[in-house]
Amino acid sequence: MSDVANPETPVTAPAGAGHGAAAHPPTTTGLTHNKVAMWLFLGSECLLFGALIATYMFAKSRLPAGEIGPNDVFDIPFTSVSSFVLLMSSLTMVLALSALNRGEERNFRIWIVATALLGGTFIAGQVYEFTVFVDLGLGYTTNIFGSAFFTLTGFHGAHVTIGIVMLMSALVASMRGRLSARNAETVELIGLYWHFVDIVWILIFTIIYLFPQ
Amino acid sequence: MTQTSSAQPEAPHEEAMPEAHADEHADDHEHPSDRQYVKIALILGALTALEVFTYFESVHNLGDAAIYVVLIVLMVLKFIYVVAWFMHLKFDSVLFRRVFVTGIVLALGVYLVMLTAFRIWGV
Image (cartoon, rainbow over all chains, first blue to last red):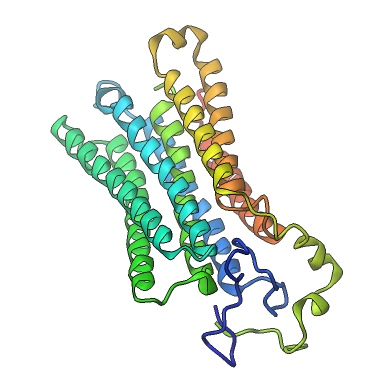
C-alpha cells in the first residue's frame, strides 16, 4: 500500500509497531483498502468452502450401502499428523510477520521458509493420501462420496498451494530488498490468507474425518 | 493503491476520522508477543490431540451424540483461537470482524437450510 504522491511511502506501521498502523491511513474507514479487500475476500471464501462442505455432507448421506466410503479409506493417525503440521505452519507464519515488524529480516526469511516447508509437507501428505485412496479403489468418479471428497480437499489443497507460491514470492521480494518493516502489510495479507486456509482445514478435519461415520 | 478519501486528503487521519471510527481503532496498538503466539500454538496442539483422542474405540462408549458435541466444541475453540490471535481479529478493527462474521453466518444459515431441506439429519 502506498499513497498517490509517493508510491514508496508505506501506510502501515513502522518497525516494531506490530501489525497495525501506528498512524491510520487517510481513508474514509481509517483502514487500508488492501486489508479491507482481503477480509471481504475471506468472508466470501466462507461461502465457497461452506458450499463444498455442505455438498460433501449431503453426498455422504446419499452413499448407497456397500459402496466404498469413509470407513474404508480414511487413515486418521496419518491425517492427524498432517493437520498438526498445517496448524504449526500458522505459528511460523505469525512469527515471520512478527520478525518483519521488528525489522529482523533474516528471522523473517527463516520463518517464511519454515511456513512454506510445512505447507509443502501438508500438500505432500495430501498427494500421498489421494494415491492411497485411488489404490484402494476410490477415484474421483467412483461414487458420489469420492467426487465430493476429492472436490473439497482438492480445492483446499489448491488454496494451500497458492499460499505457498505467495510465501515464496514474499521470500524472493525480501531477498531482493523489496520487503521490509515499512511494507509489512503485504506479509500480513499473505498471513491472513494462510491462517484462513488453516481454519478451513480445522473444519474439514473435524467434520469430514473425525465425525462418527 | 490510491486513496479514495477526497474530503480531507491532507488531514491527519486521527483528526478526520469520526469518533465512532476512532473507538473502533482504540485497541489497534496491542500486539501479542512471540511467547504468546507459542502458547496459543501449544493450546491448539493440545486441542487437536483431544480431537484425535475421540477417534479411539474406548471413547466411543460415550455415544455418537456426545462425540459430536465434544468435537464441535473443540473445533470452534480452535477456530476462535486462530482467528482471534493469529489473524489478529481480537486486536484489529471491528469492521474486519463484522465482515468475516457476516460471511460465516451467511454460509452457516444458507447451508444448514439446504441440508435440512435435503433431510440429511436423519429426522
